[in-house]
Structure formats: structure tokens, C-alpha cells
Length: 489
Ligand SMILES: *[C@@H]1O[C@H](CO)[C@@H](O)[C@H](O)[C@H]1NC(C)=O
Ligand SMILES: *[C@@H]1O[C@H](CO)[C@@H](O)[C@H](O)[C@H]1NC(C)=O
Ligand SMILES: *[C@@H]1O[C@H](CO)[C@@H](O)[C@H](O)[C@H]1NC(C)=O
Ligand SMILES: *[C@@H]1O[C@H](CO)[C@@H](O)[C@H](O)[C@H]1NC(C)=O
Ligand SMILES: *[C@@H]1O[C@H](CO)[C@@H](O)[C@H](O)[C@H]1NC(C)=O
Ligand SMILES: *[C@@H]1O[C@H](CO)[C@@H](O)[C@H](O)[C@H]1NC(C)=O
Ligand SMILES: *[C@@H]1O[C@H](CO)[C@@H](O)[C@H](O)[C@H]1NC(C)=O
Ligand SMILES: *[C@@H]1O[C@H](CO)[C@@H](O)[C@H](O)[C@H]1NC(C)=O
Ligand SMILES: *[C@@H]1O[C@H](CO)[C@@H](O)[C@H](O)[C@H]1NC(C)=O
Image 1 (cartoon, rainbow, N blue to C red):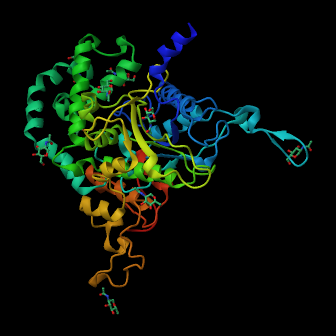
Image 2 (cartoon, protein in one colour; image 1 turned 180 degrees about the horizontal axis):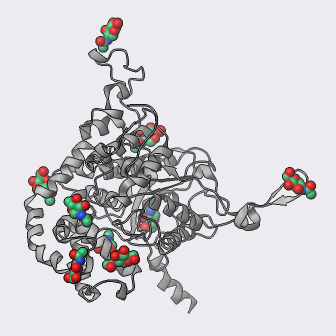
Image 3 (cartoon, rainbow, N blue to C red; image 1 turned 180 degrees about the vertical axis):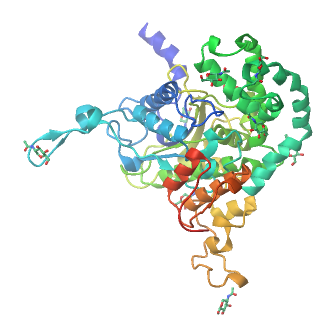
């Protein structure tokens, strides 16, 4: 009997025996939120529950003392900050999601967090040993994506001139125009549901995502009696709204003949390689080494990455907008025994990609998929890097060049390239290899968002400082309109 159940269990535990997880990179979407149609957009209690569920599952899988895929050397109960790198784009919904996720990953430690003071008395942190893990802002030229949840326009925050132009060109494509035309009656037929928010001229495929978002959020949060003509929202109508939104957003995020459109996925790819490589390069026995990197970001970034990595070759489902609280994971794994000193030999290390649509949980375990049009789900580290480097963009100089941006962080002075008419300000670091980082990028991106929205003119006395704080960028993404600080670009 015992043996039979073991045999039955075995196939579901294929990697349990010899494999060691050295580290992981998780990219995560926020949980349920209010509609983008009305500001402010906020994470709902349901959304908090969704990301908490996911955080708890990742704890059970990677962190707990008895976790089946426990990450080598990771602390089980008391978070060791150097082992973790948690980032989010600048956005209330995403940053709040990251915080709630961490509550699941490292819940209050109870008596384990108690400290004894010099005078002998004991003290614990509030909320029974609550743990404080910082969520840092992603600081890259694309971090203006902070406006993701307050903006219907997917590419608004990329700040990348050529990517914005590329996405915009979708609206001239024959494919778009044909769908716009063929769905005209469909969107108009639903006016009784949403005409107070989307008047007739706006009720078209052009607004496929924001219309879907408004209706979808309403079906989650409004009783049917609070939705006018709710009987029009049949399952098949809702499905059609969703798949049209999927088509709209996928095409804005990725186009095979215009890879710059997927700039968000290119930047993410470089961040994944860099984070995993940080883990890989550290001695396997080093307790303080970075082991788990988690980034919260937009569904558009998932789509851009899926397109670049050819995930749809594994499943057509990757064409769709991922559900709330979805996550993708890149596990760094080895079957070699770990050296007592020094790093694991990269030749012995592989990477596995997994994806959970919606909250990861025991009922929705992340599944491994092959990427890059291959068949293997576990790829040798050097092969993985080679594939990712075909589209990864990891330095400011390369980003500026690819985007065709020439001012702000992309000005010759900022890049440290001396030019004949810029002799004084040419800097000394020769900086073509500066990493994609810097809060100035966020500010530049916000300026671009404002420009895209045609709002710059409305903002009296817009001032952008050359060196800015993330706090400013965060504020700017809150209200979308008013940016005011001292200094000028
Ligand atoms: C011990 O020190 C802490 C911090 O200074 C103080 O709050 C507490 O009252 C002290 N306890 C005793 C028993 O003196
Ligand atoms: C993809 O890009 C190509 C070349 O720029 C363009 O011809 C085509 O219309 C684009 N397709 C979509 C759906 O944007
Ligand atoms: C929306 O449609 C309903 C029913 O067709 C109509 O009674 C109402 O006046 C319309 N409201 C607006 C703001 O157009
Ligand atoms: C309708 O669309 C126009 C043009 O995009 C926009 O300016 C306007 O704000 C929209 N109206 C509503 C009520 O969403
Ligand atoms: C759902 O409720 C919200 C808030 O009460 C309202 O603004 C929205 O219009 C409702 N949705 C629909 C489709 O009626
Ligand atoms: C990983 O890091 C090492 C040491 O810093 C470096 O030599 C190597 O080029 C990096 N590999 C990749 C793929 O970035
Ligand atoms: C995730 O689920 C949504 C349905 O809510 C679907 O449209 C999408 O294709 C799914 N994505 C993947 C990768 O399974
Ligand atoms: C480790 O070995 C197992 C069993 O042979 C295999 O399924 C898994 O892919 C291997 N992992 C790596 C990283 O090679
Ligand atoms: C910058 O100026 C110095 C002296 O003023 C001159 O020697 C040098 O060639 C100039 N460099 C460039 C790039 O023009």
C-alpha cells in the first residue's frame, strides 16, 4: 500500500531527488484592483488576498525549512535582507502588491523576532514580529511605467521614442483597421452597459483594453443590479471583450518585425540574466549572497517578454493578458554537489522557466514551459544566456541607441561621450557600459508620459531637476499631472 502510493506520487515530484535550486527570479503582476477608468487606481482587499496567496506559495516552495525546492542557504523564518532583492515599478498598485507578497513570503516571525535588551527586558516588533523587507523602485529608463495602472495606454511609460512610435503604428496596420471595422457593431451594442463611461464615439476596438477593464472590474465588484443592462453581459460577450483586449494589448506590446516595440521585455531579460548571474557568481556556501529576486511589473512587460522569448510557440495562451497576481519564475538549478568553497561551475547549472496564470497556489502550481521555440524546459546556463542575449538590453547606451533617444539620460553629456561642441561637459567615465539605472530615467520617462498625453502644456511651470529622487517620481505617477520640483533639465 505504502509503496503503491509512493509510486503514484513519484511523477509529480520529478526534481525532488538530486536537484538543488541555487536561486530564482520571479516576475509578478499585481492583484485585483479598481478600474483604470477612474483615478485613483487602488489594490483591493481581494487583490491583496491574491498576492498574499502567491507569496505564501513561494514561501512553501522555496523558503520554508521543509520546502520541496528550498533555495540553497536561504533563511527560512527570519528574512536576511542581503538574500533578497525586491523591486517594483513606481506604481501604487504594484508596490502595494509587492508588500503584501512579502507578508506571505516572510510572515510575522513571532517569538523568533524577540530581542533581549541590555537591561534584560525582551522586545518584539509590532504585529507579533512583523518583518520589514524594503521594496525598491526599479530605476531604469523604463521605470516611468509606473503609470501602468493609471494609464490605459500600454506604452505610455516606456519613455522609448522608437517603441512608442512602433506601438502607435499598430493603429495604422491593416490588421487593426480590419478589426476596428468588424467589431464596430459589437462595441456599440454594449453602449447601454457603459455609455456613461464610454460614450458612443469611444465605444470601439481602439479602447478594447480600457473597455474590457471597466466591464471586467464591474463584474467582479458590482452586483448585477448596479450594472445597467447587465443582461447584455453574457459569458460569450465577456469572452469576446477579453479576447479582443488580448489582441489589442499583445499587438501593442510585441511585433516580430519591430522588436523595439517590446523594449520592456528586453530590459527585463537583461535584469533576469544579471540577477541570476549574481547568485551564480557567489560562493555556494555564502549565506549573505543574493538568492531570490522578485520584481513586480506590468502585464505589458509579460507580453513583451513572451513575444521576444517566443513563449507562444509553447502555448497559444501566451498571447493573452495574464490574470491578476500571475507570476513567471526563472529557477537556477543544478544536479552537481555544491562546492564547500567557491561558486558552482556554470557548466553544471541550468535555468528552468515556469509560469502560473493567476495566484500561484497548491491548486495552481507554476508550470514549466519551453522558451525560444525549443522543446527542453531546463536549459543549460550558457544556452539560456545566449538565447536571452539575442534581445536583452542592459546598458543605458544600448537602450538610448535602440530607442533613438538623444536627450535626458541619453544626452552625450549624460552618457559621457565628449563631442566637439560639448567639450566642457564631457565626463571622464567614458560611460558606454553604465548599467541601465538611475532615477533620472524615471523623470525623463514621466516627461514623455506627459508629452504623450498632451498634458505638458497644462502643467504650468513644469520643472524637472537633473538629479531627482524616487519620491518625486512616485508622486508624479500618483496624480499623473502635476510634477513640480526645483531645478531644470
Ligand atoms: C529596558 O530598556 C528599555 C529601552 O531603553 C526600556 O523601554 C525599558 O523600560 C527598560 N526595562 C526595564 C525593566 O528597565
Ligand atoms: C508589425 O510591423 C510591421 C513592420 O513594421 C508592420 O508592417 C505590421 O503592420 C505590424 N503589425 C502590427 C499588427 O502592428
Ligand atoms: C446610455 O444609454 C441609455 C440606454 O440606451 C440611455 O437611456 C442613456 O440616456 C444613455 N446615457 C448617456 C450618458 O448617453
Ligand atoms: C473619448 O475619447 C476622446 C478621444 O480619445 C477623449 O478625449 C475623451 O476623453 C474620451 N471620453 C471619455 C468620456 O472617455
Ligand atoms: C460599477 O460600480 C462603480 C462604482 O459604483 C461604477 O462607477 C460603475 O459604473 C459600475 N459599473 C457598471 C458597468 O455599471
Ligand atoms: C556573470 O558575472 C561574472 C562575474 O562578474 C562575469 O564575468 C560574467 O560575464 C557574467 N555573465 C553574464 C552572462 O553576464
Ligand atoms: C491566462 O488566463 C487568461 C484567461 O483569464 C487567458 O486569456 C490567458 O491566455 C492565460 N495565459 C496563459 C499563459 O495561460
Ligand atoms: C537533475 O536530474 C533530474 C533527474 O534526472 C532531471 O530531471 C533534472 O532535469 C536534472 N536537473 C538539472 C539541472 O540538470
Ligand atoms: C577639448 O578642448 C581641449 C582644450 O580646450 C582640446 O585640446 C580638445 O581637443 C577638445 N576636445 C574635443 C573633443 O573637442
